Picture (tube, rainbow, N blue to C red):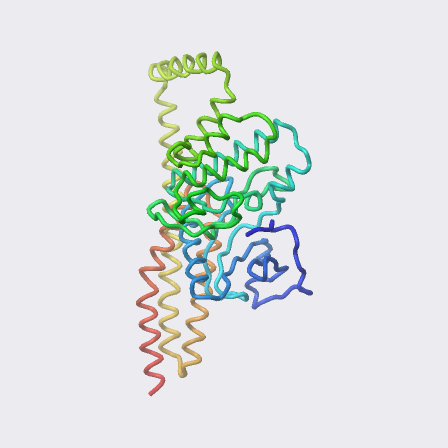
Length: 368
């Protein structure tokens, strides 16, 4: 994604309403990204180029994104096969400008430092999760127009760190030498790209950090964005403050061990219990939905008198499933969303193969 979602939009005329599901508002990036509306909420629909490889890459991007949750990432809701624009990832719409455009406004050094800290935070999170972005550049870093915060986008070339060979993700200007040379990449390749971005943001200063990021040999760079983030924080903490902070933290830990009361411990337990109860309630809602909708679908399938009626029953059930997958995680607390998404897709994977078999069997019966 080389363009921000709020730039270079091409309006496509009146809003296109598809059966009360998604209303397509505008399209851009060669017709592969769409701003849509559903139930009053603006969303971004990301599609592939239509090829088998493109579809596989889109699904891989979704698999990597769905387990991630960080303020610096656009929230991914679901992957849908049947939409007005075909198979797509449904994710949070971000109204922002690219890092390049943001820097062009000549923000203060303090604001530049804040943006860099946010970028390092989200990249450190990705690397701790074993995810390599593989296409870091200013066009993939948005600054929210209202929030003023970083949103890292476009995981089309991302992969996990169990893979060694990568494809060159995007602009060669921001790619590490080893990625250009033979397609080898790991977390240190992202660190190299971050170094160039830091150099773009700051005309002076931070030479030691930037130079280490830009070493030609990966082994001489920071091992990950998490290590780079720690170096960044140390850079902004005077030595005497570091020493005082270390003493204060040590004394604080010792004091806490002596003075923490049963009430405080109970409060922590209550908070954890509340999260557990909320997750349990959300899972029960998923179970109740499947317990009601699966028998209803099987009943409709058994009463179908033609293949078209059987197909209609399946389409209606699939639409309802997409709705529960999207709407339920969106309205529960942030800290239990990943666990609930795992449960939703577990139920989906446990249920759909048998239902598809039932559909195929019924279609065969109606063909006789």
